[in-house]
Length: 314
Image (cartoon, rainbow, N blue to C red; front, side, top):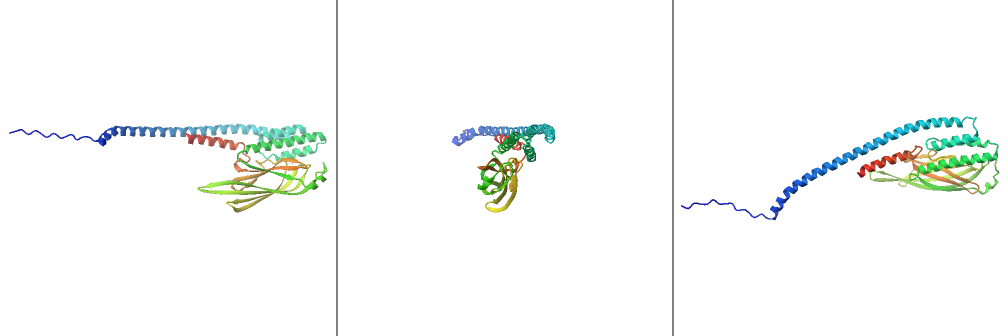
C-alpha cells in the first residue's frame, strides 16, 4: 500500500494590510511610550513653573512687606519731625516753607496736605515785606503745582482727563489789588466720561456727565466757588445725581480731594492756572478708586500682574 503523505498547510500570501499591521505594532508601542513621556515632561514642567511663580510672588510679597515696614518707620520719624517744625513759631517763614516742601514731596499721596498749605498761605499773607510775600507765595504755588503734576502723572493710564477754561466776567475790571474782593460770575460747562463693567457675558456701560458751574472768584486769594453735578447712568438708564459745592484753589490734590462715585470711581476738580483777567484753567479727572491716595499701590499691582502673566506664558 502506498503511504499517504501528511498535508502541509499552505502559507497564505500576505496582503498590504498585513504588512502594515506588522509595521504598526512596534510603532504603536513607541508612540504610546513617547506620549507617556511627553505628558510626564509637560506635566512636570507645568508644576515646576507654577511652583516657581508662586515662589516669586511669595518672595516679592515678603520683600515689599519688609520695605514697607522700613519706609513706614522712616517716614513716620520724618513726618513727626517736619510737622513739629512747621507748627513752631520759632522758625522763619523761609524755613517753614522748606519743611513743607519736604513734607509735600514725600507724603503728598498719603496725606491731605491742603490744611497745611492753607495755613502756610495765611502765614505768607501776614508777611509785611511785599517782595518777600510775592516770592514766598510763588514758591508755595509752585510747590502745589508740582504735587498736582506728580499725582496726575501717577494716574497716567488710569485716569481720563478733560480741561476747562473758566472765563472772567466783564465787570472783573473793577478789581482792586489787596482788598480780597469776591466777584460774582455765571460760568458753566460739562464733560462726559465712560467706563465699562463686564459681569459674565454682559457689559454694563457707565456714563458720567460732569457739570461744573463757577459762581464766585477772588483774585487776591486765587479761589473759585464751584458747584459740581455728576449725572450717572448705566446703559443709558439714569441712576443718580451727585452734587458737591466747594471752593477750589491751588491746593486741591486729586488723589485726596475727590468725589466718590458708584462702581468705585472718583472725580476730582483741579485748578491748574489762575490767569486773571484771561482765564482759569481747570482739569476734571475721572479715575478708579484703587488709585486714590494709596502710595505706589498701582505699581505693586502691575508687578503682581506681570508675574501672573509670566506664569500663564510659561
